Amino acid sequence: MALPETTCISLQGPSPLPFDLGGFHWGDDITFDQSLGGMDYDTGFDKSNRLIKEDLIDEVLVQKCGYKPRNILLFGFGQGGMAAIATALAFRLELGGIVSIGGPQPSHTTLSTNDVKNQTPIIILGGSSNTLITQSALSSLKQAFRYVEYIKWSKPGDSMPRNRDEMLPIMKFLASRLQSRSGVPDDAVDVG
Image (cartoon, rainbow, N blue to C red; front, side):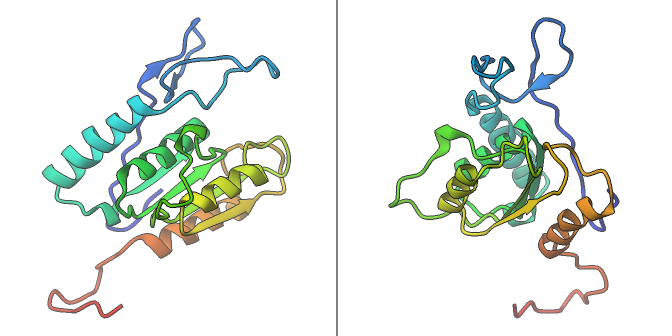
């Protein structure tokens, strides 16, 4: 993506997958779902929270580079989306937003009814069937976050966008959240 006045950083999960499967994961552990026979995505995100929140956002982007948390957006696919959501809930400040494709809120991050909703806006996208984005997953997100937009694709499964129609909601979300200063005079005042 070529976004104006935007720096994109791509992270891979910090832990390699076992058994020479190739690839990496964001979870604290690897467990297998006995009912489906595959790997369980929701295995805790404490390690990735520390990596993303403390090492990357706090130390590098905010302290060293001077970014404001409101100008930081997280984009994740599958377990990466879950890690982004877990990080935002741990952060307690409004981030610029989260784009999660097929990554629901991790189960260990549920909030009590007395907790204040997180102000970070989220767009979550998933397939029409064979998706991790269920009504229960959406309810959990809406309980934890003030603004949640859900896009249900017509295709089955939680895969990456493959055409303009699938990418357009993400681009609209990014356009609404990015704060471009291009063409704005230095002495201009924001009244919104």
